[in-house]
Image (tube, rainbow, N blue to C red):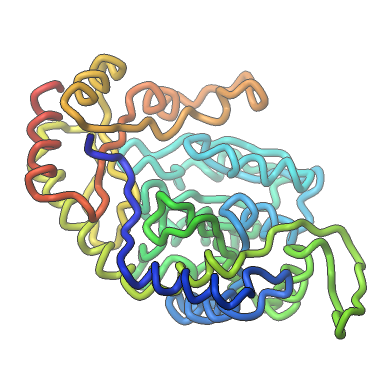
Length: 358
């Protein structure tokens, strides 16, 4: 079976893990050791003001939103995303306002955001779907005009660029996921990149909030001034992250080369566009009769996915709103393997099989 996702590991990860294991220093809420090293390396990689590592992309989103007073305020987001993009708003007392997507990119349609704004709107969460960057120029222009904050969901976008600058360097807060299926893979991990005039204050708040609110630690003494969570990253994840970061550019180039082949050889009009600014965490196509199509690919030994069921159609979020493009895409989208472990023969097999059954 050709896997949909497959982490890229070699002897470097094994050596790094063994070193942490034998050190007997596996985790610390204070985030010293490899966690701090990873934060510093990732900050240099994306060129952000500062970075704070956490234990998941969900934790990153939840903590990032906690920096902005969104209680009883509205936050704009797409519905085509993993449910955490909406959960983090609810967790912080806000109200999610779903906006339709651009049918060509499946990112939030920046041309219709303005129509969904109200006096209660406080922020926008663009999702770089599949690693394809949203139109941040347009989104930032809207945010500036209406005094809104932009918190990017970059769970798919490690290594992606917008206007030749890495995703992670543009907005007030940018949230990454390092789940094992992601381009930069860890057992579990996430990170918040901050670009803000208050970045030093924000970092201090985040460091406390990721560790149950603990602050002002001196020896065994410390204080707690506000609520916090158990969201800190462990040493195993951090040391794997350091190893993965060294080869991220190389691995993303492999993903791009596969995407270029798919773009030129898959005989479908509705498929993910090719851009060399994209990290290609996913590669999507839109098909009719999805269930039958996926079954045919499964019979041919090719694993596929459906990313995602729109959030506004989930029972928790169901509202009487219409997002026609999101709803159509939610029924038709199929994601196919694009990871760097694919052999050339497997890539050709995927292309031939997709073309045969569409």
